Length: 424
Image 1 (tube, rainbow, N blue to C red):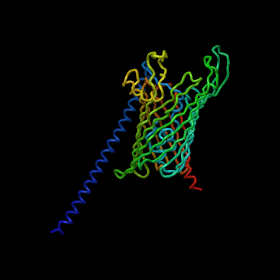
Image 2: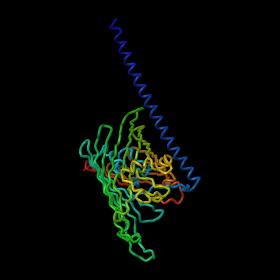
Image 3: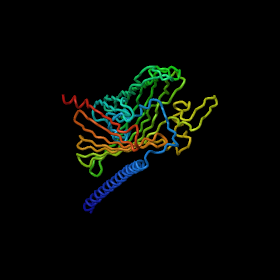
Image 4: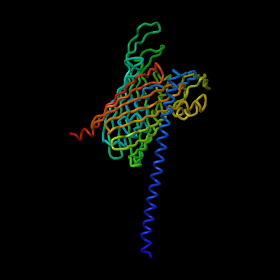
């Protein structure tokens, strides 16, 4: 009797295992469908916002309370991949320009070493001599450790200084640059962390007298703390990747252009994002990404504030809070409460398509509330990749007419050092 029952028990167990596996696959498929629908809804929402702003024209900014910081060049998107995806980068799959977005991504790079150079003519709708250049690279120490570094240089062109009477006092070429080094480490098979340190120098006046006060270049130091999650899995007979990241950038000292009398916050920012990548077959690959970021500096008051020591903070100016105090208070200090706090969150979404890992097309949308800067634009990009080199390009199209960011271009040339060494 037992000999008869044993095969039946085996069949029952196999059937139960099969049904359990099918149920698991079904749940995965439902999860992926929900995710894709959610991302599609975000894109539809972005498209509706874009259409509304085209129809409305220039948005009103009567209630504007924009947060301003020193050295805003640190927040400019330097590379073409993110620039073509609506300025999305903290949670996307790793690339050579990850130093700006999330240096923890370098821990999951497949190549041992790489270098990238990006260039962007900036504000071409206003002037023709402002440029941003970005050089970045990384090197794996071993299977779990990586180091990275970058140089960002921002030239503001030639500026002529005159006195209050209009007499010529000199001509300068203001410029700013930042040098940073990063260390990344795999904390598990799917999770990594990174710390980056940064030196910032900003020379805007060339030592000229401004309102009778001698100016000087501003110097500051900052740090980034970032984490990244990367998970490869198969579902629906397809290779898939889910990735997510968080990066708190530019945690550092205030900067001054005088003898320390006035100090301004640098753009401490929190970025949070996620991406889903799927490969329907060996030739096609799609990535959908979303991101949110917020400045972690004090919101300026709309009315003048007098402190106990007699100091007066006027509308549009930052308070005298410390850097740490400014970070924590930035979540609750908006004059109009939580409504205004949510207005300070910038949103972006992007999509990327690769054919045969050689040709790429990208598109995205960036949204900033009209009271907090009113940047709303579409982005487009393309890329071409060989064994050693990769070339990317992006184009920015604002939703408002006569916008200073109109027709912004970015170019990126990437070089895979390991692939080049293997060919020799």
